[in-house]
Length: 481
Image 1 (cartoon, rainbow, N blue to C red):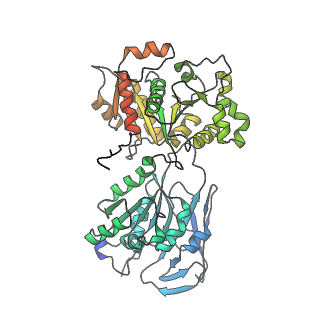
Image 2: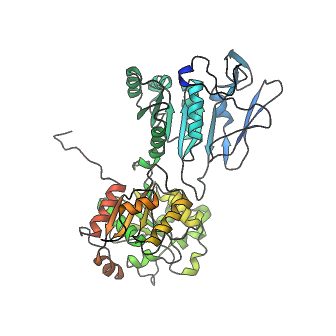
Image 3: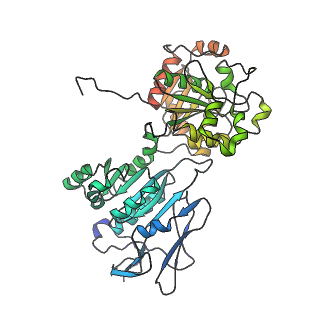
């Protein structure tokens, strides 16, 4: 007797695959990704209708999405969204098509990569879906089995679209042009026709299943981090974070934005450290004058617009903008994470780079900044206490994700002190680069001055870091074009 809950091997999968059934009683729940609330599938005693509904706040399951997505399969027969049965499908207990429209990103959590799944073979469909749902870095915003249903779910704004070769073949039609962003193809057999059709469909990559499933996840997670700025796109948000004092957070944040500005980029620096406002001192800004700060956004927080934020920015002579922390430390207690979340969200579409100066604490404001960041520069001084603080921060914030979002930077690098190998052994993350000790830094910073744009030593190291975070695009000369 066949076990209905057994998962078939890929070599046994044929036209009628056995898949792990979803529970069909009224008290059972489907497990969706951790970023979304559970979805309950309710089937009446006659099994003549299927209804899906979301059970928690902040997200909604699109009834229209599941209807247009085509069909639901229940108890071995294909069931349309309106409850009517159609052609028989042997050996299938239950499958579904759904769409989730999430709302604001949750405070204090890493932003997930949004994946839309479209695989025709239901056995492979279920395997890939189960694997992606188990990864907390990925949010599956829709799962369908037909190409027309995939196109109808374009409003879910996925970062990546994972399809099988059959659906990739259908997406070569001109009507599908541009409607499946970052197309990734999953194939059980890598053949020349599969590769050719994937290329013709505009696929970014093709992955052998299940051998390359880890590479598939890494690619999905990397997609939202790799996007470059376009007139209608979003700039890169980079958080500079030193979990322990003395690791040079203020120095790196101020000189990183100066280096990116020297590249010709439009940049803004946001000081999230309302308790100390070190950026104001490091940039030599006279806070005794009428300088606008983040506190000026408090009266308009509920109706904050891009114009309000632009009016609150300080324009530095080096060419970048700064959202300063309030000079009065008593005012900083009135600043809330929601204010900075709204400000960063509105600044990102207007600037190529948004640099966040993150405070040492792990309060709500720091967590919001780190959760919104595309890249986190984790600064580590070469001593045991700094390594201990960095390890605790990595564990608390989940920064050890394989996507490489966290860039560990040793600052300052001193001969005879803790080296790159020791840092990697303690943190589990290989240092991306290091900033050497430079006696000039302290003297200039005490005067509120930046290093010259062509300085050597620490200045050159920061420029290397800037190029690593936002590479200067290469352009072809006329002779190569």
